[in-house]
Image (cartoon, rainbow, N blue to C red; front, top):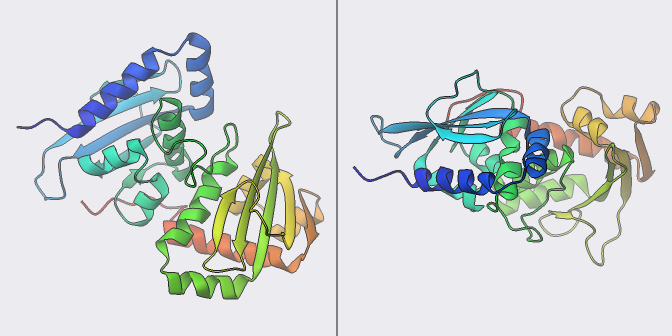
Length: 268
């Protein structure tokens, strides 16, 4: 029986991790703070062979074959080819989840941290490419990616309809506890819409939203509503304030599309 392609992926990840010095390893553990268990099937057939690996990125920082010796924070179910595509950056975790190519048991936010592991170990989307929307040390990165992937799974006609509904350009200035700022721009006014890390050349924002990283996460997750966040000063808005309501609606559409608050099994 041929080996799983994932075996090479996990071996390469572990090899890269072993090259980390203690400080680098602790930095990765602090960013991820989770235990992952991967249930990989050879293909989509009902009786396909399956193997299990685990990545403990919570205390020691190790990747090994077999189930996790302690309860995992998240368990992921996918086929061998998709595991490889995730690792090399041909498939994002958000897109895999939205298109039923990955199932999970556990919090979606933890699943999104797979990108941190892959990027830290030299895999995933290269930094500086159009698909690289992440800022290290910002939980908001995972949620911005969700919105971007939500747009990508829509047809061009659906995207045009969404642009016609929103009619606005958003600039996000998000600050973390270390005093760093992450900037994203979302154009939902022209063409079929786009999300970009940094500013989009030649386009002015209709609304600028400034907030802390944690408050953006809470807003997206529905822990606070936009009006309350604005009234309490957690969100500062400059420009067309009515667009903030359309953003909140778009966030809800994204959550429904990806099933952010639920758990689901991949259709394997």
